[in-house]
Image (cartoon, rainbow, N blue to C red):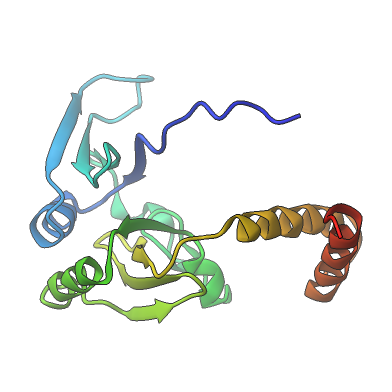
Amino acid sequence: MSKDHLVRGVDHVAFPTFDPAATVRFYRDVLGFPVVHSICAAGWGPEDHPDFIHFFFDIGNDDRIAFFYYFGTDPSIGGEAREKGDVYGRFGADVPEYFVRSRHLAIHVDDEESLLEYRRRLDASDWPVEMQIRHETIESIYTHDPNGYFFEITRAMRPVTPQEDLDANLTIDALLDVVAQPEPTFGKLLARKAELIVERVPV
């Protein structure tokens, strides 16, 4: 049974920062996202909770990206043994780079002109674009922000069709079936998806 879809997008995503000055430079001064809200919190939470400021940038469409800066927090909190990833959620040196980069924030723009404008701003800053890639339906630019968070700006190259939405649901249902069994593989996923297509798609 399907449930009513009542939400209207992202209010905000939030991350910790050790470097609020560089964070403001990146999001406000380089990308042009205005500061739209801040919370100055002294004495919140349990007795050992540090004072903090929680500040928000407008990323369009009434959505925001926000950061917490905790006064007096030691930047070495991530530990020396962890070498990859952002400053709080680091991974060991043996963790593959694709796994580390899978955790990221992507925001979208309307067209190629806008994407290239953000590329120009980033390339002129301390955080130049590291990759520009065309995927199946989107084109994206990537960099790391001052906190080590992997950051993407993307634009659609064409609309996603209803047939692709159907394909996505078949893929996810096949994935759930395959990972419920021992030793899931990509080949098993494709085989199960083919079975679901035969079962569900009208001829």
